[in-house]
Image 1 (tube, rainbow, N blue to C red):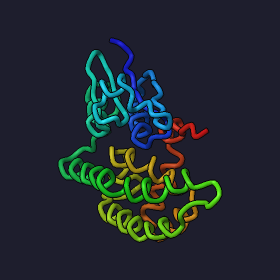
Image 2 (image 1 turned 45 degrees about the vertical axis):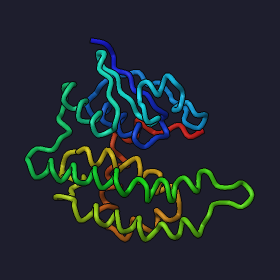
Image 3 (image 1 turned 135 degrees about the horizontal axis):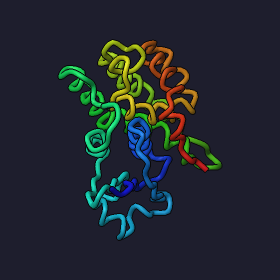
Image 4 (image 1 turned 90 degrees about the horizontal axis):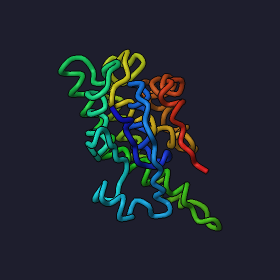
Amino acid sequence: MSKPTLYGPTYSTFVRTIRMVLAEKGVDYDLVNVDMASGAHRSPDHLQRQPFGKVPVFDHNDFSLYESNAIAHYIDDAFPGRRIAPYGMHRRARDQQIVDVINSYAYHRIVVRLVLPYFFADKEKGPDMAAITAAVPDIEHVLSAIQELMIDPDPFLMGREIGFSDLFLAPIVFYLMMFPEGGRILPKLPRLAGWWLAMQHHDSLIKTAPQLG
């Protein structure tokens, strides 16, 4: 059986999610950087792997897969180790509901509207603080909705064991907490703040720190 290959840059939250899934399962893999800053995601080679020019892409035993949630579930099924999918129909459904909320709403509100304006701010003018400030209520709204969906939050979103929802949310909150707004938003959500405290000490998050240089 060949070692799987993951395509994408470490700074991508979705790539980090898959790296965390692989770490949770104890899977050794090759990581191939796709430098989106230089346009590598639009190269003919990458478009053959992912026709929409996104990351990540995952290859395993001549089976190629894109879209992060599909990849995450495939890894959970294909490799031994603790199951990431929560036990019980209701927990599995709630876990996937949170993943959908993250992918449909939280990513855009946090990463696109707050994180990227900081990262790619004009060197002379600085970040567009009016746009960032306008994003804060929407970020508070989506994180509050996620907090309301937590089941027995002790300490993770679905309880005692890491689920897919934790692995999708943590890379996004990691970036949020780099900026002052994160430090003001999260304390308003005590259960989610407790979750973040636990996640910061979790091996799969620690071992997958992005390369931001």
